[in-house]
Figure 1 (cartoon, rainbow, N blue to C red):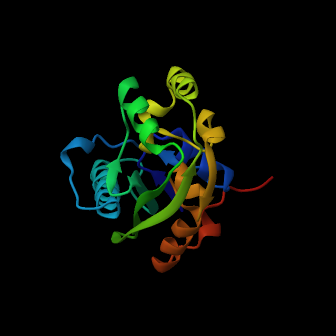
Figure 2: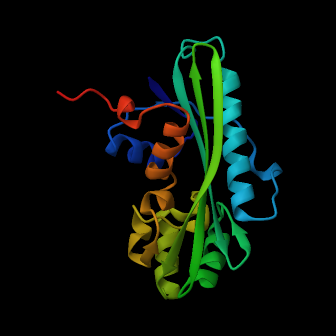
Length: 205
């Protein structure tokens, strides 16, 4: 059983590889800006579903057709009701961090999982939430972080597995979820679809 990752995120790819899975990466062309939702869970799960289904349609009739599992994900930070995706620009990162420092937010990652076996297609969509506590960083630290180029293209303008790690004082919940993919949730979803997580592990020497 192969796993197809419908994401360009290096962090999600690294997370799966560290957990013993070597996925096939197939990036969707979904325009995230056209999707709106009332809350972080709704936005994250809808984006994950759209990305996963777009890749599923592209894989139909290709070399990847057959038995496989497809995973689409998307993350959103909820900061007291304000939904924060990828800031995109330096100015947006500065504004975001000045609002986040010394506070806590909830990082929500939507997971859309599709199991394709013998022509049968089964789907599940779920969200996982992790509370993230941010350090009371200085303006100089924010400027230095902006200069790394890291926060502009990540949900919430931070990471816990890169330069931003020093600016996160703690998390409550699954830390993998903050990276962009909750491995425990993925295992549970696959089990509900009749796929054993250990069957996805790459062979050991």
